[in-house]
Image (cartoon, rainbow, N blue to C red; front, side):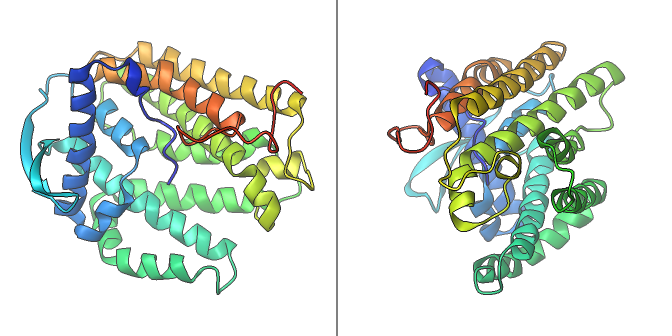
Amino acid sequence: MFGYIRPLQGELKVRELEQFKACYCGLCHALGKNYGFVSRFILNYELVFLTMLLWSEDTPITIGRSRCIASPCRKKRYCQKNESFDMCAGFSVILTWWKLRDSINDESFIKSLPYRAFSLILSRAYKKAKSDFQKFDRCVQDELLSLSSYESSALVSLDGAADKFANILKAAVPEKLPEPSRRSMSEMLYHLGRWVYIIDACDDYSGDVKFGRYNPIAVIYPSERGVLPSDVLNRLETTLIHSNNLVTSAFELLPENPWSQILQNMIYLGMPDACSRVLTHRWPPGRKNNKKWMKLDE
């Protein structure tokens, strides 16, 4: 699911890259320990980012070593579990579950079979995550239902649709945070959610047009060939940069924690890089440009 919020690895120090990998593995360990082995397959970069963001400023990074299914012979470094990992592991399961339910509703019965199968496998983990984080689960369910209703209405705007998804990430802010930090983090996660929704719609545009799936950008800017003109791409780039800037502004108001340097890399460098790559069809990193899809300089 998604995966757009990741560091620009070439700009990380060696120590920072090792710490990021350890955090990624730490969340995987937390998913497996809290919600069973199958939940490890839903690990994604956005929740690793959220884990680092929610990390208490006075909690040190503690690294351990362990073997796992991905590295059975050689022990890998991982961050040892704490409250931040527990929260984001539960959030991962809840978000994936409702994403699966949304995909089941959007697809025909035959095409939805893989989603139905995985949701059945994940159901036990979801019930536990729902019990652990009832308020977040209700918010995700309500906002996705609201988003589905909004997407089927006659009056659809990109901002209106993105707002529903942005409220989901906003709900991840812990209530125990002091008010100034809570307000800044709410603002930051709201605009981060908006950015993720829009960039995901950009990334899926040509495929959604080809297969007749819903896409808010395709509703507003329809195209039979799945090609967006340069003026539309420029508008999308502008709104993505605007959201990125608002994320940056809110982040600067938060107190530093042990992950602040890596978080800065992801916000200041990783997000703009992902935006550029998606809009020129070079996503994920390493993919060559497809000139038949869309161009910024047409």
